[in-house]
Image (cartoon, rainbow, N blue to C red):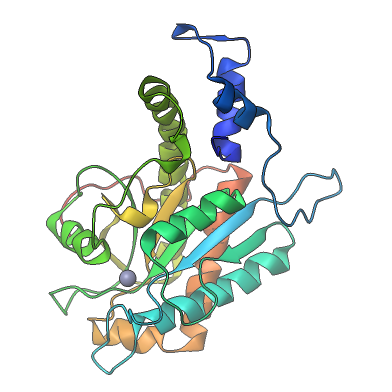
Length: 289
Ligand SMILES: [Zn+2]
């Protein structure tokens, strides 16, 4: 059977339920049809009063295990900062009672980028948030920034960041394996359109929310080809909470009270995203930082 995520299933059922679509008469291959009809793979339905499972937010603390990520000027490992902040955000989101939250890693272990995306898809995540504090060549640059997926990078600084994060061109649309190339292409483009809109929305929410309390990188809403954001069917965003290469950012991110502030800002953005409210601030600001 072709594994299909809940978002893709909803979209496809809507578009193809009658066997026709904007593309004309359209017959799903039997394997794909069976996958569409299958129950969504929710694992821990906590349920609200209406019995609807709370949306699953997948937090992705960058790096881990043998991969320390960036190492700060005074020796802080990015992998520690990303995990500590993700655990704080998980705590805050769960305390709201409105979300289920899982982590791609909850301890100091190495997880390949593809496996992080796979985990989110397997669990039926509604949102994927990757959390980092990388290094830039220019140590004077500081502040938070937010990244979505795009075929080309918004600027050279972001392109360099994506090159560091991605160690190979790993992306293959796994969820469509088994479908014919034509069907795969149509389905993937439909799903990506919806995913892209969601990704841009959460990114703007994050920029608006972080901007209220934290120093921000110039043009903080950026995009590039990050492998970890390539789930075709889950709105995905990568947050650089600051840069390990900057002494002030590193010192701040070592402090639990600062990490709590970062998590609170991200929590507000997630709330705004799921509430469907307008972005707090921060239109897309392409350009060089
Ligand atoms: Zn990183």
